[in-house]
Image (cartoon, rainbow, N blue to C red; front, side, top):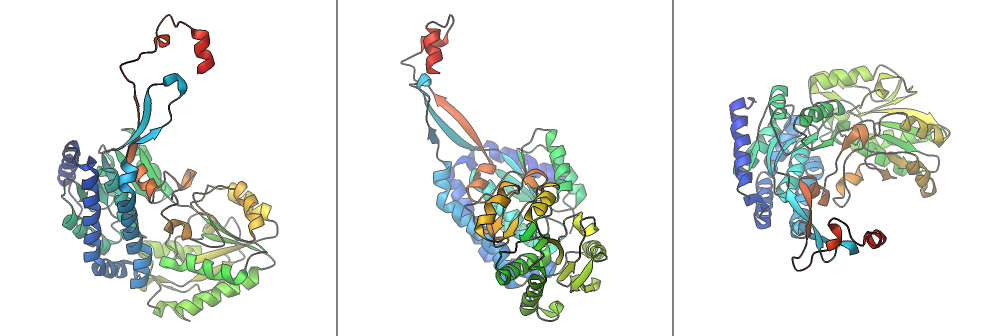
Length: 458
């Protein structure tokens, strides 16, 4: 795919600024129409999206719909249902000493947004954030990942079908294009990717004091305590880890299993992986592939330490790594130093939950946190740890509820989106106080008469 030229980017950026200056996007009915047009374009191209996801990542049609297409469609429907209420000015109480003034919050679009998305869920992560930009009344320039070129081409087609290029545009390319984009002045940058690249984005944004939403990642722990339902935990961990071949920012990155149940748990995880993908997952129509050769090489190196108790097969030509479980992992192994982003599950053992809590807290705050055990233990674990989101006795599901904010904390990101949070992410909550002209409090003026009475009121 050819990189978008500097001149084209500059023309598009200028067009967005000019279009936003017409104030057309501030009309809620316009936003509603654009969301409906967006949905229609997705539905019209659903098969192309599905085929592209298979071409780039070997995703089955079912997984493509469940983890990408349906999430975007649900997000659009949610915004269509609630946008008019969200966009209305919100009256708030006015303190006694400010009466008879009234107070309200007006939600105005931030302006022109830059949205940069990764390759692992290339359709969902670009288009889902675009819903928030449209809903809030922003113009947007989109930048998909070059590592999933087939999906990127289909998304470009969808954007051109649905929108005027002065309103919503899409540009293509690698790091050089990213550099050009980050040198431009946008009103908000929405970035999804690694923490290292998030730092680059944030540094670039600082030149213009541009607000950023950073959806990053990290090593999300999965803890299975002695009180857990072992069969259920195994099934849900296997599912959460193997979706998209583990290339999920909120996948269970490493497993801490209580010593009393570890062996049984690992056998059951193997059982479910085999049940779903067969004895040779490479032949399964449901098991995705690793995105590229560099990722394969990186993941192969992680297989060199610890005891492989399941899987471990690699076919670099097919971009395939089998579902793999590595036991007897030490915390200083390479696999425990970086986010895995593959179908490899390292396993550590514990006998006291406090040691697990200490380990988690000694490292960067994760994007997700998974705990399997009885509810009376959950409060203690959550009280003593921090993460962007969490599930109790399950994995991944918190991302699917648009009533919940999704985002990281610390090294795993900043800012939230999904549902109402997406509308807020691209909006400025403008504080407005309206004071009538028929009355003017004299006490606020020099020489501050009756000041001792004023102190009692405020």
